[in-house]
Image (cartoon, helix red, strand yellow):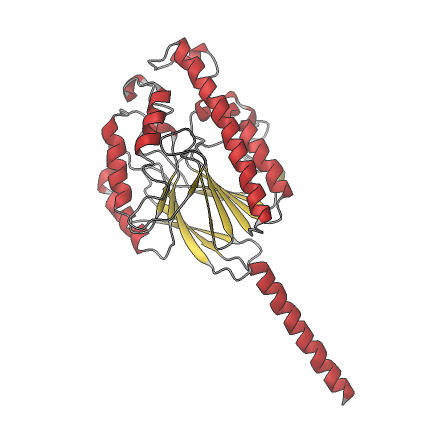
Length: 338
């Protein structure tokens, strides 16, 4: 009789411990889904005809919000004001909140002759004033975001918010080497820039790079303090991970990726110190990819996963299911729009 009571007591203890562990790990958070998309529409690729189906697909999906990771137009068309106005109209067609992250085609590349020969710093200032009209998200439904800067001022585009135990970080880290100008040839190729404008671009890069790293560091501190079970980092530019397919070539050390090295080094350091899972999201290359690109092709940073989103002419999007009870937390699913 005593043995039966002992077995019953042990069984109840095991159940209690399991329940306690599960609730402790998940902390009462509910699974949810969110969307990722960007690098669209490109008028020169005929994307305007395909865009309504993408918006409809996102609107009909069971997601809480979506994040657009930059490039509102193609890289060889003008950066005129109407482009930004058209994009705001596009975001207004989405029912759920959408968080906008800037890309290179809407400011970094606007110095190109076929982009109108704009001053990149001026286009960035204009973007901050127009594309971010509120502290909230865009979309018909809104959600409040924490921003690094005040409305209309530097770094207002950098965002942070928490949802069901996951901390989301959005940063202005665009393609074209993060606006770093390497030399005089890089400065003037196909460009309306002069030496002074390129010097100003490099000053902008250095100050924004420092601000981005500060925002990342603060965000990981918050994730630790609030026991966030996962962190999502979103920006636009491809930072040039070392690819296993190109043995003997380390892409991360190529000149065209040097504008990202400081930030990626900070990502590695903070991910190493973080107990949860990190999802790093970017666009720029226009084809879907999921992998573990850090540290190197032969050694991975196990708790970091990279998602590269679709882009023109492939107008699809990515759905991420977040299950806080899972060891991997993030389940990534491409959504093909017909």
